[in-house]
Image (tube, rainbow, N blue to C red; front, side, top):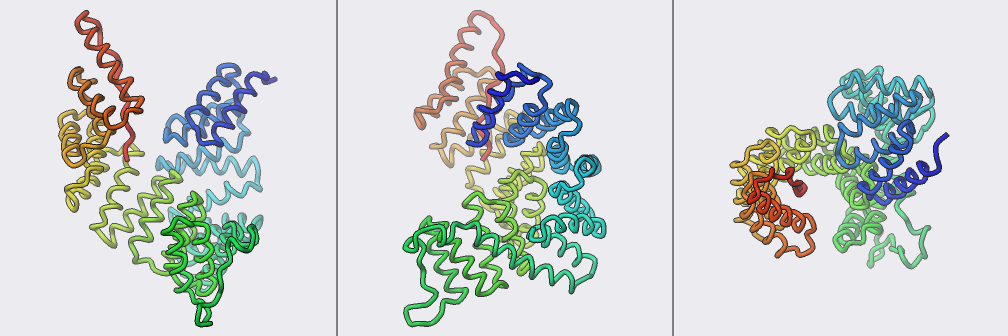
Length: 441
């Protein structure tokens, strides 16, 4: 029997999670676990929260505890599998997805995850069988239709593949129209747009794209999405219409649907680096790190000078702890754009994480030469100097960060800690623990 106090903290954590206040959610789930250490739901929720905080190892440990307490917790098994996919452990991931389908043969998400993993490693026949299970339960799953089409195409079954690509295109358009807050959900005046030009001619796909682009630029993303849908209705084979729809969906934080739209754009025009790059960004936002890196690589194979792709690939690699590879990406950015202060800052953060103090300080100093108004750079430089025992220099950095941003709480706390360390030094006490760093861009 779970105590009322434990349930109360769990519900408070869930409420905070829904508001994306992950730190508060984590605190509540940990309180619930302290009260009831064998409450698998709290452990599962903790894992979900840690995942959203980019702590894959912590999330994995939490899911393992949840599974140990309740081996039938299929959500924990499924999420554990997804993390193992990100950590490049496909065999272990597949065991997790198999466990879910053993527990519940109708779990569509697990069947889809199995299919995607099999397709990734070229086992297209087995992948198609899994996609068929998904489509048996949900015949209109656009993503499963599209992925099955890709698998069929890889097997040389081009006619079957094309039929599914056409079906996927129509389904994605219908889904986006149904979910895009279109006119029927508003008063007519809000969304009314004529299907005809001033001269009486009907608006074609290019015209709808132009309308959508202007609305998107003005920040009216919902109405822009309406226009992009109309463009696709006019011409489903216009890759730029799919691309623009993906951008609008991404701006609305509907990244799963954005990826589907980018997939259609890429299918129609695979040699466009921007399509691959934006798909990578949507996947990065979804914390599908390895898939994002693959998209950045595809973008860079088309345009090796695309600094944005090098930069975001570096960010993705940093998430995986692959610091030297991340540094190599930032070096590529700086090769094409030596005055990119964000690349210098991120490169400094990577060297800092490796413990290479001199190189990190060089990068922070270079970033500050280019952008002395960035409080985060001053803060991270100060934190590094603090950790090396250079407290007076650290205080100078924190002072500059606070001058730029008087509400920079972390800098205020860090400056106080550096002052305290100076006093401890005079009394020959041991220094405190390392300071936290500002996030990488």
